[in-house]
Amino acid sequence: MKKERKIIDNKNGTTTVVETVETTPEDGFVHGSVIRPTKMQHYGKDSTMYHKGYSKTFTYTTDDPRITRPVAYTLCGIFIIIGIIMLLFRSWFFGIIFTATGIFALLNAKKDIDKKAEELKQKGYDVTVDSIEEKEQLKKEVKDTIGAGFKDATSSVFTNESYNWFMKYFKTIYGIILVVVPVLLGIIINIYLGLFIFILLLLIGMLYYYIISKIFKKFRRK
Image (cartoon, rainbow, N blue to C red):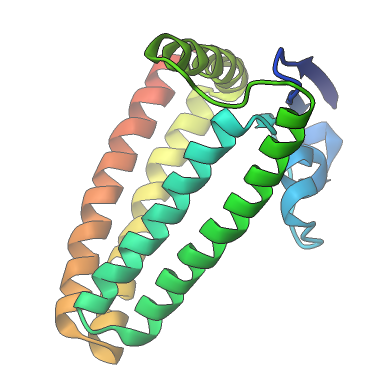
């Protein structure tokens, strides 16, 4: 097993952590907290999550409010939008859960981000994006860092064997999900909601299949 951890001290007083972990079948079953240490650190450890095989994971975390704020707002906004759509279809239970979860997470994230931003301001650091040029530069830095790590991780583990395995099992598993989930929702809640979820899952599945196929074909080793 190979581990590489890089800590970057940003100019505005924040910290970015870039970490890669590479495993092989010889390492046996490896706990998820070892493969994705940064993720597990924030979301808790699941003692039942183990992996075995070829894997190279890349994790990127930062406490820079200029990055965490738009990411948190976007993710929470997606939850709220899904909740509102469910409410429109009169799926009150799930609609309320998604909407409430999105709002609660948004308020909690805003509180934590504002607290970090205030700490940095008191130290004299700039935590806002004041121009389009700064915004584009920040996006480029994040894109370059994540892109380089992602490319390295994918090119190291994508082989013909893993590509063929993915194509075979993805279609089978997702096909079952595509049928079972909408049918259950249609029976238990609302037939129109079931139809909506079916169309949504179908479009998501097609898009996911297309994107992953392109990634495999681009990065897999011959």
